[in-house]
Image 1 (cartoon, protein in one colour):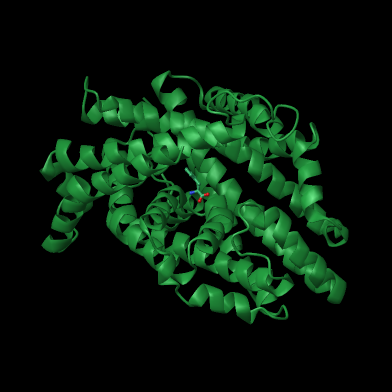
Image 2: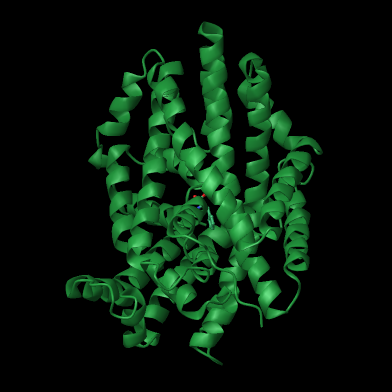
Length: 454
Ligand code: PHE
């Protein structure tokens, strides 16, 4: 058998994993949640969730992937043959596939808005809500943009682990981390931006209740790409010298920094245009921000251009590196488990995502009346099933698997790189305690809460 692919450097594996984590969740979903849930108070709780739950579950996914050097499905099969745990391997792969089907739709919108920013036409939109509505409900245009983002992702995936995923993560992620400063500065330079900053920095603890804490946990899981086989698959390409806990720490730090920076882009700008509520929901990025850009265009045109181009470029880069990481677990599974050629496997994944992506995209227009389940459109259905159902179930299973099922010596060997790393005993104990008790209980609560909201 050929030698299995590997990331060639530590920087490569950190940037690829960070590329997976940093995505629409950071730039689009995080600020929305912050706006709805009390500004800085939410951020503090979010950071706590990342440190306590996120890091433990991420380290566990890394451990499973790196130990087995196999795709997610075969990884569980190898660690717990002929047992119910194998279900998680299957679930991880399918969750990723489901997410890809609707994530590509929003990535397509991002590309369209980047084109509008580049041509400057974003500066002359008069009613951005109507514009967004007309675009997303039109039959062909969103499909074309969605298809382009899937083809770009496909193009990287077929190049393989080192020449595709690693190489492009090493290009796209540094660009993303460099350009993020530009929209932050532009946003700060808007008149009246201080109000937004105040909102972000002054914690309003009166808004904190159990729902807010559960939203913070859910957001942390989504943003860190947990429980969907992505990080587990990437870790199967890690070398034996990769430090799992440290890598998890770096990825979480990059992810959280980008999320908070996105808050610094969005709130000062949004407060500067009007009294719009900062909790305008997902429309924030595609409706409220274009208003900001129009204002910037009308006062200083080049500022409006730079601000809008850099913002949508940032969003696109973030989304594309995540799409790559969602494509890979499925491709690796089909390639390794069914012995298909990698390129054939990738074509199947892309084609199926394209097919369901069409349904998700059209659910904003001609298919809006088709409601496959509980009055949800296709888009909402795919989002709900993957992010609200499969994700917490997966999180619980992973924690229980590593906390209770795996041999403790195997777990310790992996996180200490066979005893060569000195990890304090208290940290190992805390890690195992979280996996055994805290994570399953906490994620179980998120899950029950999501269901109760139905
Ligand atoms: N973490 C990504 C984001 O923040 C989304 C994602 C989810 C990526 C699941 C991979 C797997 O947008």
